[in-house]
Image (cartoon, rainbow, N blue to C red; front, top):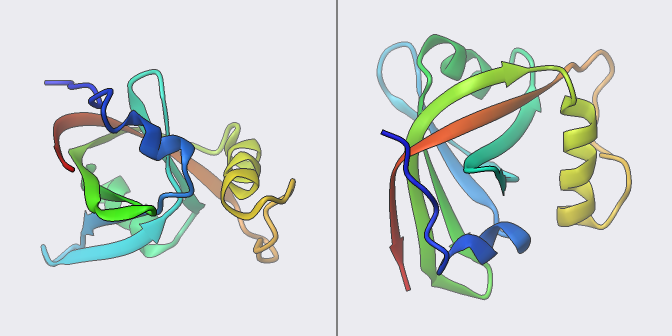
Length: 132
């Protein structure tokens, strides 16, 4: 069942707050990666490159968890559990550039690798808890 991000913690998505994304490997073990995140229209968004571990994992099993800690107070955080409900390459380049502007202050994502295909993921929150 979809849930919303509490207003008390929605500001985390306007800060340079990194998320920690947990996905499940094929053998069921967890895999955690730091990510850039944003929130729009009730969904959490993140971006990666096609073929990376998190990409493979969410295509096989869309269940994820994301923890976002306040960079100004790490005891204040948000934990989201949900499902990746959309995976698209459409608009992914623009999305990673927007995230690069937010997190790095640059207009174009500077870490692109040759031949890399960017992918944008939309997460439907199903459970949210917060602290602080």
